[in-house]
Length: 378
View 1 (cartoon, helix red, strand yellow):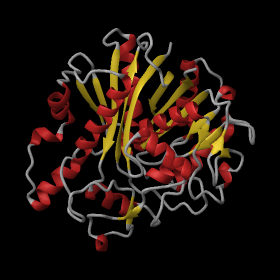
View 2 (cartoon, helix red, strand yellow; view 1 turned 90 degrees about the vertical axis):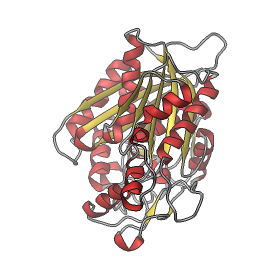
View 3 (cartoon, helix red, strand yellow; view 1 turned 180 degrees about the vertical axis):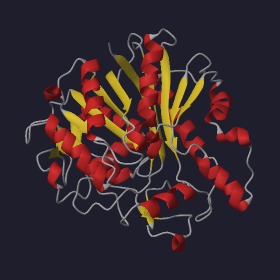
View 4 (cartoon, helix red, strand yellow; view 1 turned 90 degrees about the horizontal axis):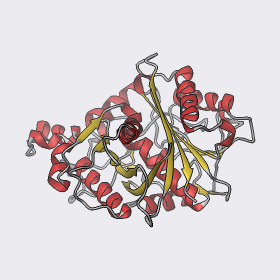
């Protein structure tokens, strides 16, 4: 069974549409910069991958995660040729922080806040008349968990079309927590390089329109073959190689695909030493050294966009399959030992006309794992 992806939308620190983001990735352009609104003196890390859309420099605004969510969904609906009326279409949103930053601004600065606006469903009803909205807080795998639920809804006959999205804005409490728990102080997110020192947050939103089968004459971006999900719960923060291996094997099984058929892997690539070494070691066991699929990690240029990161990687995989082009891992000059046999794209975008199947990884705190398999629509 496959499901058609007919529309895509996204906004990130280095682009305002999926195509802009992909072009920036292929050109090696990131959106990293000095913290825009937090007090630098309070934190060791001084950089982040923020979207520069605030009306006044240095002054934060509430509702940014919701604003980007609407932008991404609007793009995806227009791309799919789908009306903005979503009264009969479920909308599933993956997130880590939801509108936590809006609550922080109310608490700290007295910024106006309607509690109803902390839930994405309020805006989705107002904008699209959406009656069925669901929010998934499955850490960094949230949007791929939402995608898995979308396939279930379609298979169960609960819907023919589902909008799946993810969004997060950086919250100061989350940034501060990360700043304190990481041993080192990263100035950039550098996945799989020996210089990696940890994760830096990014901002953005992403959305796709997933349907049982595209209407006759409507273009299809790619076909979703499977989404595997699990929660190994082995540790509150450290990844478990067995849990990751199981979710990948489940994704292959559900897709009816063997590992040797995979042409591209969009790595989770969080830039933390433990996550990078674990993911690389698992993939090194699955794929033969030096002859496996091309691999890249978009967080090296977008930062970690949290709940939406898995779906953002998926949309970039779709464009890679369409264009036969794979962005590089920015800053990767000296791969960690576990990754030395992997075909990581470095320095420049790779060109390949043989990209048919793509794997998308997303692994979150608590052993919340997800992996998706995509097929090119040709």
